[in-house]
Length: 487
Image (cartoon, rainbow, N blue to C red; front, side, top):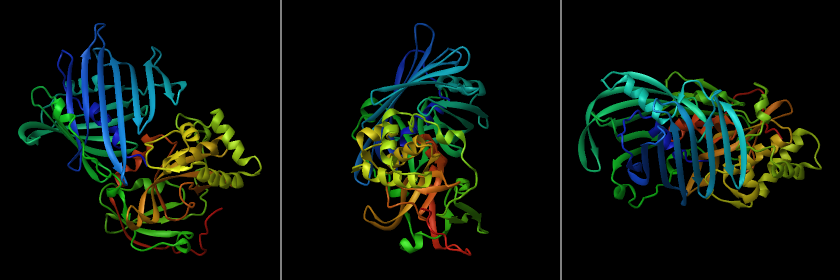
């Protein structure tokens, strides 16, 4: 699964911090659980034509089970002096998998978008979310609200990487003494709640009391603490100390689970250290019951099909991650199923086909689209999932990408653990069924946090649960009939 750390720039853009009139760059070091993993460079400039340009360049280096992964994003946006959005361009490089997105806002309120990846370009348009702001508009909203302790305000921020808008609630707190690279500073604290993927995420920032320049930012990330500290360029570009982002996300199983356990419905008794876990109840085949203790839940996972909430047209539609209308994707889907009749049999064939088609099982790929996987034939569970979902849609099978955790007997030297994972939920035989091309198949050892369309932004719907879930016990669910895995 994607680490989720590439979106740090989104939090930074959401902060209503002031900036000087003359172009000036600001540098930050980025730390995860106390270890330096990267840097950010921020620029605000007033151009000759009166437009305001914001730039953010973020570079992170992390590890996933010993595999070094470099994530780089470069975002630019243009707005009027009053903060009205005009245009933007974004480049994202996930371990060598690069993509660019250009957007321009037309007078009719539509956003014209051009995306480039693997040498191919796509163009489409969307309605600009009413009231959504880019960085300058967000900054001005904070200026208008003021920074008196107790002040509250809300903005709708547009993220140019995911092309999504999210709500941000800010509350101005009191002055605090804060340490930044060994120095004590008296700064103004801001508490913010970001609605990312439908889940509220709490962050805290500290700004200069007079200029409101950001000095320190702290937020939760996959069970760890992520921080950004203002410093000079030399400090920001100092060598990194990559940390294993998987280590904090593993969930120990109370006992070993073999095939005879996993083919039946299972009841998991869970304790949530943070979050409410509402997303767990929104996945086909999963039901959630709150227990009297308050922070404990009983989650039942049934690997049989689930006929609730039939698919919608979007579950068959191509998008920039699941390019089910791409010639190469369509041809591959036909090649895999040319001698198979019926959607149930085709879905199973596609699952097996993707398992063997991706020949290099690797964590080196940050996050690739279906078209990129067709060409590269390399990746981890996310690449298996996006390719499988795209092939299913190309064959007329509604499909969604599920993200969460899955049981494995061993991983990274740990025994009997649930690891971050991605797979596919497809509508076949008039019900939703699970398919996993990265592992041996779908079973009751799969606990989904979210369902989406392959866009990594959707992962945030359940990111609060990564590193925040404890498994107390696992037992077979009490049912009249055993729940055999749907094939």
